[in-house]
Amino acid sequence: MTCQTYNLFVLSVIMIYFGRFGNSSILAHLQNDIDQLKADFNSSHSDVADGGPIFTEKLKNWTERNEKRIILSQIVSMYLEMLEGTDKSKAHIRHISEELYTLRNSLPDGLKKLKDLNDLAKLQMTDLKIQRKAVHELFSVLQKLVETPTSLKRKRSQSQRRCKC
Image 1 (cartoon, rainbow, N blue to C red):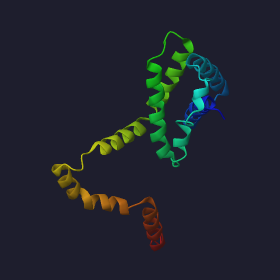
Image 2 (image 1 turned 90 degrees about the vertical axis):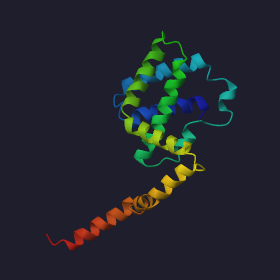
Image 3 (image 1 turned 45 degrees about the horizontal axis):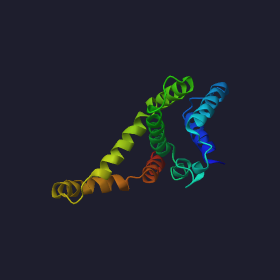
Image 4 (image 1 turned 180 degrees about the horizontal axis):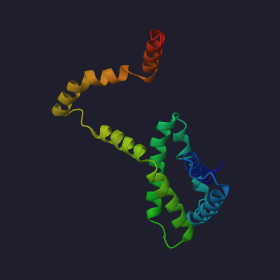
């Protein structure tokens, strides 16, 4: 699969994944729009394949549905950012942008979670005040970590066994 085909594939996966395109005619129309966008960007150029795909490789590491919502919301935002600098008078660009905006609006939790991750990455852990706050919260964080979904399932199943309702 070529890199340009990957972009079509990723965009299609994003839209199908969120149930936006149960109707194959809509997806077929969008594929035509993407083909026109490929021509606009000259995506058949030989350098497109250099370095491999930029999105699909990242998707492999995100396996759970909620995890995928986080990474896919970021990918959708990146496509929208890319399309901001294009000629909006072209119908195919407007159509793709509209569909991407609709998708992004259906992913508010993914965007919020991504913002949280970015905020965490920006914390200056060498700052004494930040360190104090972190130490103050350490026990609570560890409690949350111990309460993983598997331990919660185990607790539920144990309580169900005890209950003779």
